[in-house]
Image 1 (tube, one colour):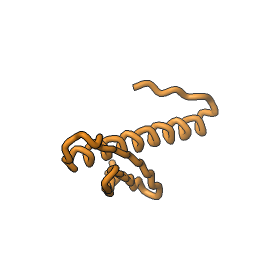
Image 2: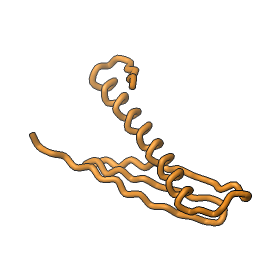
Image 3: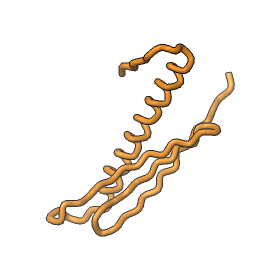
Length: 87
């Protein structure tokens, strides 16, 4: 069995108002990009790690949804029938 390797690169950009995380999945010849945002309430303490974690979790969730959509599309392309995946 041949092993495949996919990689995810995550970049995080912060400004005073929000944190933006971008997760790029490199899967062979295909790249998926997920984006997540987090905003700090002005009355909360400034703890950048929390914004990084939340924005990255949201970017990975976005990426996950894109992979599921791509999987459904691929299966429908092969079977010529509607597909509904359950978790």
